[in-house]
Image 1 (cartoon, helix red, strand yellow):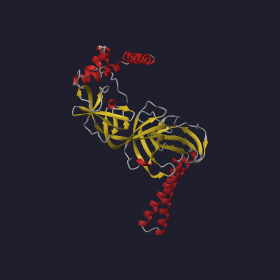
Image 2: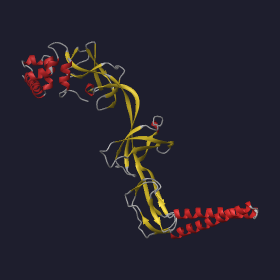
Image 3: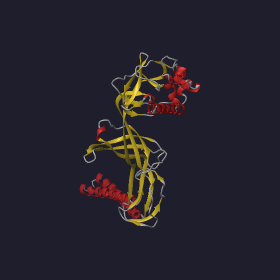
Length: 389
């Protein structure tokens, strides 16, 4: 009696379990229908389930599946780094003489052209010296011309003529020196660029080599960053890279390698690289930090659709359709992309057809039928179920 009671109790538990499974796990109904459990219990699978799952297989025939071709794609070797930006050119303008500022032709943040006079120093003494030198030059030239005429008539000596010629050349040099001294009172922009913050005013007295202003050409931003030594043989001048300013995370830019160092740092095993980014919109500034990403083409691998990857206790695998039957092929994942997965497998080749939909009831060696193109398109436009990646 006790044994019979245990048998009845066990049967009740099994029936209750089947009821819960059938009721709350609709995906299990095609499996139970296939092995005949639903017929044994006198239960018909819902029409929706038949349309969704059973509709892809004939009654007693091969299961219908959707397949995709295996392709090939190069494995991308990605390198990311953080770099520091600096201006294409930046010049610190210094005073070349001692004097008082009489004109200041710039304001902070303004743009200047190369050769523009940005600061004028008091130059009264230099103006006087230049005028004096010109007068002396005129006198020396007149004296030299007079003695040349006297020499022609034999009324002077060769020595006296050379003395007057030497005086004329000395006067010319004095004029050049006076002109140079005057030019040192006019400070020009050495390059075209933007003026930084100015701490000067008209009337300030400056000494020689005092810093006046910094002019920065930021039409391009140079980025210094480091790459691991494993890519030394792959990187080259002119190679493009992606760059994002850390302070402007939504701004994606393109740059190119402009210079490569010749020595690998022994401590970090990295190589210093310089890239440049165009700053046409003037969004970037020297000193900003940048995220740099480079991609190097690597080994060519097999490419499969993400939905084709299945998992078991032994790892990832795919269902391959060959001669109307499916075979379970283990794979090793190499790289996940947005539209495909790169894998390695000795039993898979480019051009093979792998199952992407309809894997719920497949078993190794089972016969399958590839779904028509119009059904494939309809299913792919909806939500695919039963695939785990």
